[in-house]
Length: 195
Image: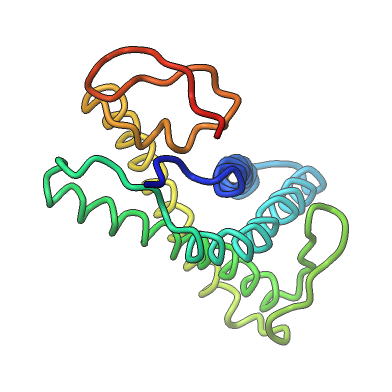
C-alpha cells in the first residue's frame, strides 16, 4: 500500500507552495502600498512573472495526481473531518487554477503584458476590453484572499494531524532527504524510508 507521495508529487507540491506564497506576497505588496510608479510597476511585473509559473506547474501536477493518486492515511479520523479535508483540497485546486487565470484575464482586458519567470510573455486570453478589467480585478482579489484562507487552513490541519493526532499525512509529503519522522501514535522517531 502506498504510504507516501511520489518524489515528483512532493517536488511539485513544495515548489508550488513557495511560488504561490511569494507571488501572493508580491501581489499584496504591489496592490496595497503606495509606491513610486516605477517600483509599483516593477513589483507588479515580478508578481506576474512568479504567479504565471503556477499555470505550468499545474499542467504537470493535476495529471500526475490523477494518475498516481494519494497515499492511504489513517482511517480513524472523524467522517466530518475527512469530508472537510476533501472539500478543502478540491477548493485549493480550484483556486490554484482560477487565481492565475483571473489575473491573466485581468491583464488581457487591461491590455498589459503577462510575463512568465521574466523569460517570455504569454498571449492575452482576450482582446483589450477596459470595461471588463475592474470585474476581473475584483474576481482576482477575491480569489487571492480565498486561497490565503485555504492555505492557512491547510497548514494548520497538517500541523494538527502531525502533532496532535500523531498521523502520517505531513510526513508522507516531506522530501525524501528529511531525516526523521514521527511514528504515528507510537511517538517514536524513525528514519524515513527512501524506497
